[in-house]
Image 1 (tube, one colour):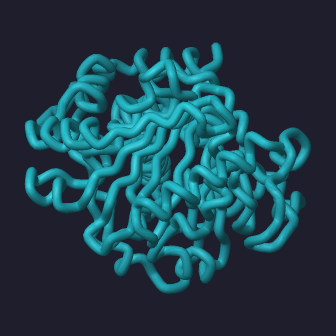
Image 2 (cartoon, one colour):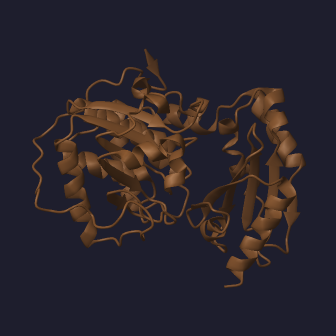
Length: 372
């Protein structure tokens, strides 16, 4: 059976060459948490070498990504898992939500038979590879298990990542974590097949906003071209990612736009537009909070506002904030003041307070950043 032009069964990875690692290179220095993001350049070769050494010496590997995974998080974890399975490794993929909900927009991704509940991950795994988690808290229920692993390797591209794990491959210049996975596969000698390519393409396409965001580079398009050369149907993947919703989503969207507020004086005069989605709307129309991730891309369209914010309410009342900037405001820094993080122009946070209090805190965070 084929979904979105991709075989539903994952299949073996492509041709594999023998991996030789310089075992003399030490683990990237530093504790598992609380240190700064490593500088690009020199440290990465040691980190890559150590990562290959750990993979070569471990038969069972757990691959995890951040809670409420998006295309880059889940696509990266599944691509790496498929490649490692092709190398003969026993692999599990998981994320720290309970229940685990995979958005319908990502239902086509190959390799989902490798996904297990967070409870099925061992309490002290041999080796954990964590993907696209900007902080240890984003690992959710798997945080403690990841830190109990004999070795924890973190692959991420968020500038707000404080640096955690034994081996840190954190590159804020990368437009997506999928780019780091592509490099991992190259170093492992794995040529992506269509299943792996679908996962990697999904990662870079989602985190570049379909190649629209500023972080997109010639190398991003070159990577996308290599994935397309495997025969994946990028048109069907894009339709599933951005152009397919339930009718209920349209009703939720209508309510959110009706509640939208434009505040031209906020964000240092650059303007803020914000709205929120109560859980009651999601329940009424049978829509999951994961389905409305794209709402922020509608709200960010007005030219009058540099910053857009969407608050989405979970069943327990927690508000998930997603925000975007057109370029005048560093929303990652603002979200860091809300105990969140992300990228300069795309970031998020969670809050337990009500909507008025949360929006007021966000306004204050924007004011502090624009006043610097």
